[in-house]
Image 1 (cartoon, rainbow, N blue to C red):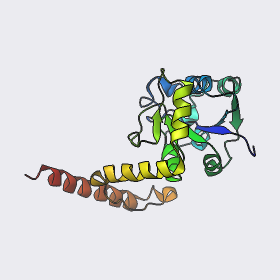
Image 2 (cartoon, one colour):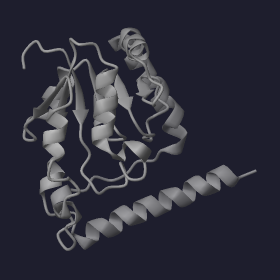
Image 3 (cartoon, rainbow, N blue to C red):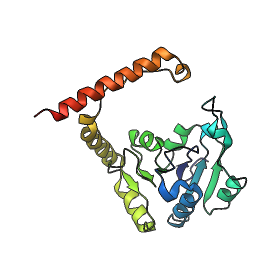
Image 4 (cartoon, rainbow, N blue to C red):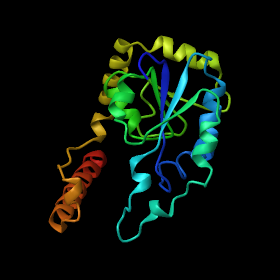
Length: 212
């Protein structure tokens, strides 16, 4: 909604390792939303959007998502939580990120998308970008004061600096991958090229690190 002050909570598709086990207790995403609601001021809403992949058959040969880990009352329980509004899963996530005051996720890549445009992030687990200083780790001890202080400190310029520092930190451990069309990933040739690229770079990295 226009002019609404909100935090965007992007649900994870489940089952998936990014919530189970990486989210630990917060693999229960309803618990995470409830905890977040308790430490937000009354004028701040939580916009919750389902992950698009929750409703598709993927992988086709073993449609795990379509077994659907969502209990029958999942969305009803979320809608009962104070300050929460459920958003249509077809709504553009980029729009929700851009207009939010902060993005929250268990460990999802949506957090990295937010950091790229200088939005602060709150995560409930430990994603690979968790050492970025503009990522706040939510715990059972987190208070409203903690959240408010974090959001006040993380201006766009501060976040840009934090992201740059993070990229410099991880640069020695990265290598260039190759573009693969997601809708053509069943192509065996593309799979082989991707695997070869990864293995060759990994071997080079290991030997570089083990040199005296």
